[in-house]
Length: 149
Image (cartoon, rainbow, N blue to C red; front, side):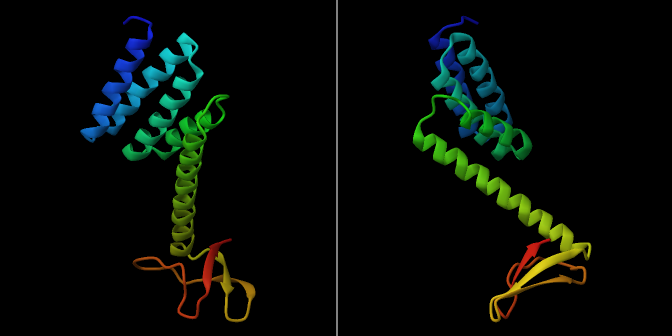
């Protein structure tokens, strides 16, 4: 492959086509190749954009750990569009909140302590809930909220 800008454009187009077809893991591989080529060519903006799309593709493919790594690398890039930065931060926040939710459900299902907040009397208390058999919940009937402890 030639090491030039049209080659980079070709890689990015193949990644976009893979995403349109629902092949997110393949799209992430194409984007990684684009990241490497952009770095070789010294194109910081293109590298950051390819890292962002690699992160989004990995997230869609279900690999949140690698998605976080790619998005954090993109955020640390010296040249990144403010809209892209906001989008990456939003995606990082979504991944983090999903992890908190999974962690909370796992703790409750094992009967481990959780912090509970009752909105009615504005106080906190640490409780051990019985293991859940199915489903999950975050808000109680009285407006209380469970927080992993």
